[in-house]
Length: 460
Image 1 (cartoon, helix red, strand yellow):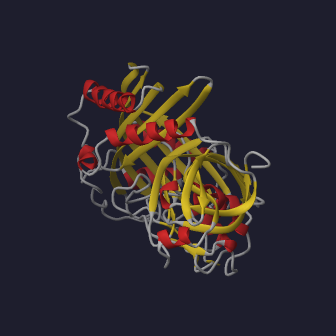
Image 2 (tube, one colour; image 1 turned 120 degrees about the vertical axis):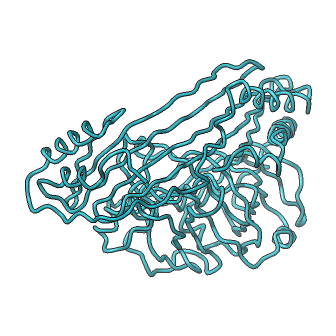
Image 3 (cartoon, rainbow, N blue to C red; image 1 turned 30 degrees about the vertical axis):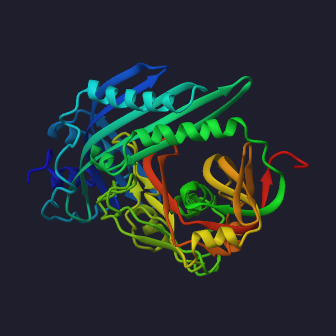
């Protein structure tokens, strides 16, 4: 298989004045986006992104350059420029080897779709949402798909080639009853094509989002105070992603911005809790075969039965910390350098029956959908919105409540979890960090925290 550039020659030019390691990242990506609002297609566009980046690393220092639409000669000139921007020393040894085979299905599952077909899908969700209840005031549907061909040539291994495909479909429903306005949101995403709709019709997203918004119209304000909280598996993995995952990214650890720095081998969570990041899960939004440094994706155990085992590493953070790369060096595009990022982050299922967890909790808050929030990775403190929650009354799901927030500290919450369900539910999104966005998925089983601070209406 012939690469679109001469990997060995470009790497040798980049390391001509020395360096510990280097890599060439080449990509050609096709994307399509449709946004429908108020029953009208507000945006419908398709585009191609084509470019390459070259990085040279020496110790803790990096030089990175990139260009659009590269041809072999211009890429070699970029390599010379990157080499010129760093002081001379002994060059590293450049590895050689055959190109790794094409990953994934080897085809673009969206190649036969035009923008009209994508717009028709969005209209189906709009109609489904409006058919649920007359109080639906607004519907916004966002659809995106992509096919990204990537070549990565690291100086210490063979070049690899990958074809990454996937789509994202989200629907936001606004319901209004007099002066009361509530929203509901639901999304699906996968690294596969529309065959996922054979398992779950897309209209179900719209129906779920609409029912959530309508249900909240008559819901009272959430109670405030300290109380037991049960996080249902369908709440998604926002908690593990934000309150835990970012603190386990090795660059934040090296910068002193993580509450977990220097704590490998310590107990940081309940012995019921195991935290994993696994980009090898089939079809998930955060899955890939190789990361953006050419390291094979791998399942990485971060916390095992409560004990911190390690961090998510890129090649550079692994070198600095004396660890092995975990295949988590990711970037948004050729215009960005790779940094440690999550893929599919989850708390592993545990031994408890999810229904029994609820029955064993006489009162409290039952959270079935998490919203946005803020996290301080240095202290671990967080505040999260609850997009959908219910009172727990005599061990059963009671009336819905609105306006709840969860306030706490990530490591403390992990230590206090006393029930971990045998189920597992996923949520999807795009994670932003250092000005870059990458597709991710998060998951958790049903969890119980015996006491958390819930923000709501005092005196309820």
